[in-house]
Image 1: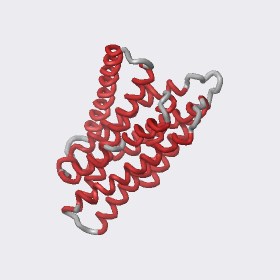
Image 2: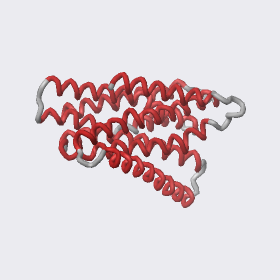
Image 3: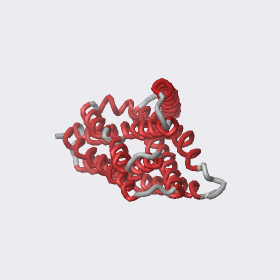
Length: 261
């Protein structure tokens, strides 16, 4: 029963990601200024989520369940996540050169973006699974409501994250259908990892701080290295257009995270 609850809750978080990704359906013809704003918005969402959705919970959980200082675990996880994306970038670049794919820069950027958001969704799925898995030892209304609150919070955060994937894909020339498909696909890992988290709650809870900070490192490097430079390409003509998108995306994600706890 606990695993079924975790699965149902995580399917809900995935559905909200799909809902966020649907925003790309409204862009029939790409507009460079709007897409720059949205690309900046994606970067702002990822930077805010890296702290409030990932690093802050990682520090809190590490303090509660581990004897090793939280700053060591979180720093190691963050750096490992960044290194993972850097290695992935090199691997994708090598594969592109080997296969002579067209639009290599855009293709690489798409792979890095989807990979980072998917990596970010893995510990979020774990978090939902762990929250419901705790009902095994604390089967009371308070534990249940806490688990439901976590699932709702993660689900609402997933709304802008779905857009953070689908909109940059549209910018790279993907069709609206494909952009939506890959946008929602980035959260498919959440139901899988939620079930694993519920089944292995004691083990997963121990590694969750590292996993959360790992995802944060992955998201930061993609936002800073790929998304922000790309959205600022026409900075001379519209100096604050993309920057406004970054600020707005950061503010929206921060609001959701802080408001929902």
